[in-house]
Image (cartoon, rainbow, N blue to C red; front, side, top):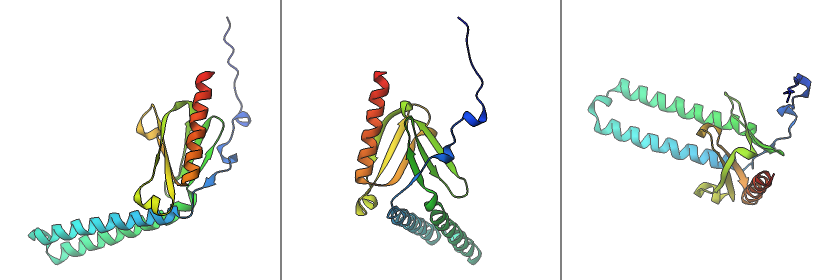
Length: 174
């Protein structure tokens, strides 16, 4: 038996740029901003407690350094959330799932349907407040290949989960 392995040209390779990506729900921005505020309030409480109880941190220079660092990091984090949110989008294709995210470091995750081991719908307290959910897809590989599509409506998350499960069943039967 002779192995035939023809070469593929660049024109024959499908382009992920041609895929129409669906943006996440606008209310998801409120969830991300709320999570930002909660995180930085906890950091402020820990930093305040440490500076109160540790005498070495109570000098003016150290307090100014801690305050400046806190302000710069929290503002940068806030700006990155605001700039990254419009780029957050997903697409479901016949054989894979795409997730685009990132502002400074843009990423496009492509996860083949037949590699997905299971999927979970998550609804944290902030997501429930805005009637949102996240669909997390787990693969057999490392955690770098798992993806979480946040900012879906509860109905969208259920429909996408059912669609992925149906695709897995169809793949197993073939």
